[in-house]
Image 1: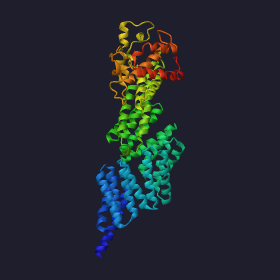
Image 2: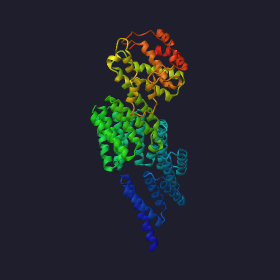
Image 3: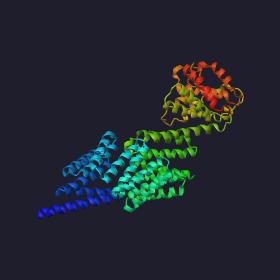
Image 4: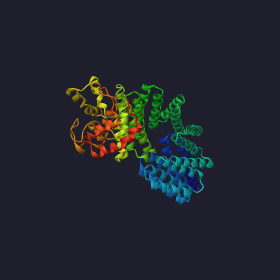
Length: 534
């Protein structure tokens, strides 16, 4: 009798420890939660309570996974699964499979993850709570792959299963993820509704961390809708929650959102301070994604402040960080973020190029036209997308070094002296020097340095000849000459299109034959599409 009573008491204590662990975990008290789960495992082993043992093992495996201890996490999860099979409890076995599937998914082992999730669905049968979690994981996988329609369908199915099973926490998570997908799709009203529903449930059931995430993500939606007071209030409330939980990674994201809000409302000093704090905290916590996103937003602030070199330095850092990201680790569609970042690169470079030209009415718009012409030539040559991006960026910065040329030389109405022309010939070198500290993801510096080189070796500054001149520099060089001939300059009027082409035929040995042919074949289309006067 005493042995059986002791076993029953141990079983009861094991169940109590498991319940306590869940309460601690839900409130964000992970050390206390882990201690309770470990106590539940010890007591369940003593009492042979396989149901509590399987669940406690699974919960502890998640903690090890969050600590980036994959071997321990998977081993504990497999033990949970085997314990559930001994008990012949298909639901608990399916829970373990679903958890391990999520772990494999976050490690980037997509085929293994999908197999485990499908097995979990098969074992779980009609259990709505399990189905909701599996659908949630499938939705996250679709999100990473950039398939927002599929993600929306999975999250909707998850929500339906949570409702049918009376799972409030699952409903809150599903609403939150539906809000994120709706925001990605630009469906702001739906995002508003989903985030508010998630926040209300999280607040009611005491899911503090999830409430903070809802507030912060809702703040981003308010920002996109230019509802800046609501955005700031939500972001500040989220920051207070993350501070109380000592969740530094989430605090970094909150600082980033506040920085964006201050930037958009013209409070640049505050915006810079918050975004710098976001970057510093991201570095401390090792969050590559948060650091990349905060760097991108600070670059956009510097763009508005005409601090273009600093903006490009930050964008380069962000680009490298995004390329380092394993999408499966950060649950983010990296490719869409890189595409967005490339657009920001182009915007900063374009603004910088236009700011260089703005003081000279004769050359205003030159870089934009060169970019359009150069893209047409590059496409005619069949160059790939990376080369096209490189050429477009190089076009906007090819004359960067001219800011160091004295104005009286640059705008001289008559013929330049030898000494003055020597100064002019230095502008490609000065342009590269100005970008020396920036390690571009694209090889644009050779374009800047060599766009005045000639195929016959008579160009400058290095007298390169033949194929020693990068093809991108030759493309920019030929369209640069065309635009110079067809626009009014301080020393002569603009030439007609036909006269310019005739002139260029006489200097065809300045460029590779295939570049010259591609230029002549594409310029008629470009000429029809782009205005020829400043």
